[in-house]
Amino acid sequence: MFGRSNQRVGLDIGSHSIKLVVMDKAGSKMRLTKIAVQPIYGTTEKYDIDGPKRSVVVPALSEAFKKINIQPRKVRNLFSSISAAQVSAKEIITIKLDDEEMASAMLLEARKHLPLDGSHTVVDYQVLGDDPKDPDKVRALLAATTQKLYDAHQEILRDLELKLGVVDIDQLAAVNSYIINNELPDEGVIVFLNIGCRKTNLTVFGRQDMFFTRDINIAGHAFTEELIKKFGIDYTLAEKVKIEQGLHPDLEKLGVEDTASIKVAEKSAIDKFGDEINRSLRYYVKETGQSLFNRIIMTGGSAALKGLDESLHNKFNIPVEMYNPISVYGEQSDGHYGPQFAVAFGLALRGE
Image (tube, rainbow, N blue to C red):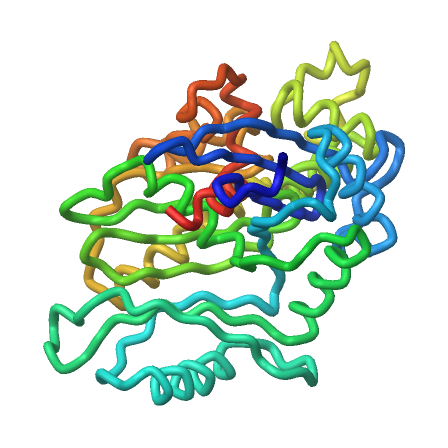
């Protein structure tokens, strides 16, 4: 029977598609049992840059559970996540406090980093350990969102009779899916890019160095929009071209006239993307003094964009890798298919 305590469901409701991962704990190991991805929009529907409405998400979520042959109301261990501008994750250095005082301090700190929407703030935190520079202080990882966004997430789950379980945030889940199975370097940090459709979560993390995360508002949809503007093609064709050929398509195959040369030159989406990453890393170096970036790990549905890894490698001169969590658990998967499941795997593995 589904619902035994050793089975866990990771649910990633993205802005473009829904990803589901079901894992079963056998002894000390986790085993992948079911996996599914469900597009939120039909093939002729245009992506909503403001994010999908509840009326669109709920039917897609229902279809995702049908694919894995599980009734939502029977799910017992659900791990889901939220991602929006009203989500914050930040490392805080603070004096050692008891639990009640720490919770109060984290709430005050969270309010500094969240856009106000008139609702209360939902906060959680994890003490990472002592501050190596000051034995009287500790490092704490703060995660926060607004009550309004949290309630909206619950409403979607309730529509399918899903019982609210642990709620995480995308950037932490994506990083967790990697570090559960990979050692962090003894020196320096790793740059994680969780590249979705609407935005990219950039996270910098190392064994001894400050946790840092920032949202970059350039991701898959920006690359699609560039193709639409550059070649005068419609959204459906631009998506197809992006997936099959990347951002440097063969125009003869498309039957499209090259009009780019007569337009005013401007930076490409990939160039702007690289600039935003560089801006974030320069800020990290300034704040921490740490400049050893060991590698870039790419996850998310847009991580497999052809030419993106090479472009980032050329710009930063460090190794760039796509992380495919499906292959880690013994399943054969196209390496371009697996990275989109990083958040869902991170959620299902959260208890580990």
